[in-house]
Image 1 (cartoon, each protein chain N blue to C red):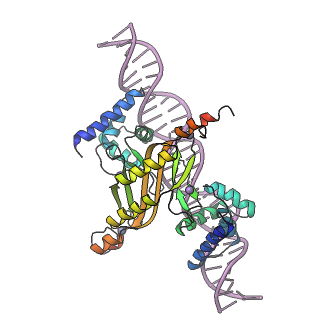
Image 2 (image 1 turned 180 degrees about the horizontal axis):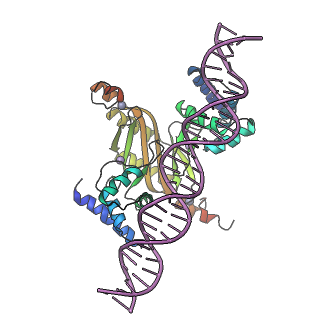
Image 3 (image 1 turned 90 degrees about the horizontal axis):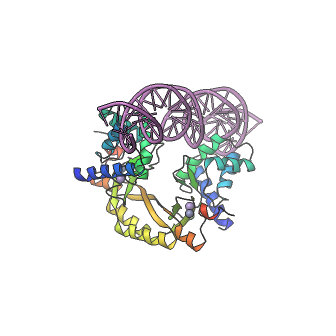
Length: 161
Length: 161
DNA sequence: AAGCTATTGAGAATAGGTCTCAAGTGCAAG
DNA sequence: CTTGCACTTGAGACCTATTCTCAATAGCTT
Ligand SMILES: [Mn+2]
Ligand SMILES: [Mn+2]
Ligand SMILES: [Zn+2]
Ligand SMILES: [Zn+2]
């Protein structure tokens, strides 16, 4: 993902802050710089650690305060992968219709996008009288097919590495 | 939903317990009788309360121990509606492909089913080398359309009731 | 430069969910 | 119908992700 796009997301968030009359503090900058320079799904704790790498003064409280702003702005998506902590997806800004398929054996996550599904979601929402704001599709399965092809990251495929 | 179907779900769960060599205790019976006699999505705390209505001896610990068994059996689905506690869906046994659309203003939830989406999910999963085990689609939006029709349960529609 | 507020860090507090362990109970064998 | 024991249970301690409190700090507007 080009730096420009990430820079763009950062700018959008700054605009969001401005619109809500929120201040652009050094801590917030460290946090959003961190968020928009990763492709990975991350946890609040990871974001804290990474942000502190940029600015030692970032506290856990501020990270937890900023995360809701990021999701409210629509640039980051909150995810539930069944763990006892949440994950956040920084790719939402660029790919608001991407979804996830998770291997229940090895926790591997593959992202995918489907225009057809997106279109069906719009139709259904409209039919039910809702205006759609966001969507989240998660498929759980296991990657045995890939395992057979020798391309799987299934735990049992790594036992002898 | 016919009593027979619910009875069927209960029997399936008993079979599941038997297969895993788990005992059919009075507490577990109270809990599953409760689960399979409701249509609503419920929380662990609600399940505890309702189950105690049937059997005073049911404890919180046993409810929390039984819930994973219910989801593992595939008869109940765990849901995340963005609250800080989980919801459980007892309609999963009968409608494994149903999904949800949630109004972000009034928390109203509407269920829907789409064969087309289910088929696309299968295709995508297969293409990505996964065998699909479960799926979960949630659409977030707001029911302003219904509001205009006077059929919405939007909070602002009830301010003067 | 000053003033008004929003914001912050540290740590206490909250709360959903999990774990421990002694006492109790399905249930299969005899 | 007993017996024996592994599986279960209830109570409450415990855990941990997330939220809250509050005095000190720092954007931003004038
Ligand atoms: Mn993603
Ligand atoms: Mn449902
Ligand atoms: Zn795998
Ligand atoms: Zn509404």
